[in-house]
Amino acid sequence: MCNIGDIDVIFRDGEDYNGNNKIAISERWYVWRINENFRYVGKLESNDRNAEIDIVKALKEIIERMKTGKYSYYYPGFE
Image (cartoon, rainbow, N blue to C red; front, side):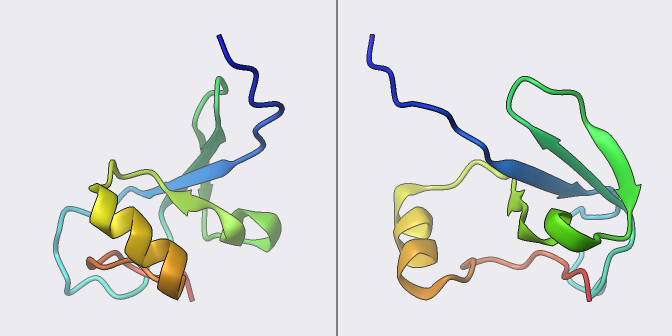
């Protein structure tokens, strides 16, 4: 087994996201960390705004995110 150290990543998921690109801004967010319970926060505030979207991604989407800092698919914003 390989020890990769501490991983302190916060994730988010929008309660109203269902692929509907008409929802531009969500105020219904959940956030969590690995091995922790989901926490409903509503509107994303402070450090929660740094949370990563929790969708499983294809390798090319991960590379695109690393290169551009943006996701290659639609997901509602928070502001």
